[in-house]
Image: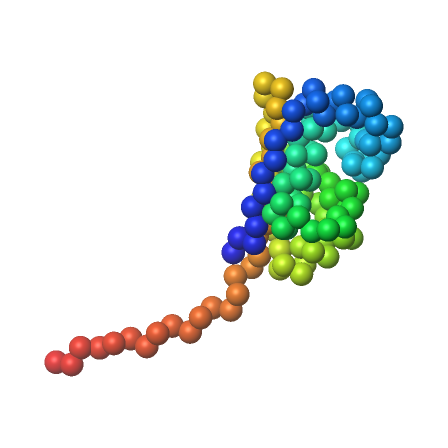
Amino acid sequence: MIVGIGVDVVDIDRFGRQLERTPGLRERLFVPAERVLNLRSLAARFAAKEAVAKALGAPAGMNWQDCWIGIDAAGSPSVEVKGTVAAVAAAKGVRRWHLSLSHDGGVATAMVVAEADPGPVAATAPSVGIDS
């Protein structure tokens, strides 16, 4: 069951200028493993964090350090959460995240789907027979 969907787009050059202009922004937005990545990858990860927030309904008090983009065993990007983000996700029943990242032509894009397990299966309606 889909709990939420989020999408975000980041202008890579503009994002780079903001990182240069604002001391400490890289450390505030990204966990240490993300900070060493190139600008295009950072912009895509920032878009993914924004998309996660949107998928959760843009909760107040989200800590940027509580959401990061890792790489799963297959080499695909994956959403990782803890703390404030994990608490909101758990309250909404989120069990799985689906993530797509892209960057091209000066733009980074991310799409996130937050998925929960389906609720209890509804009882099936009684079958109606035809009298012969």
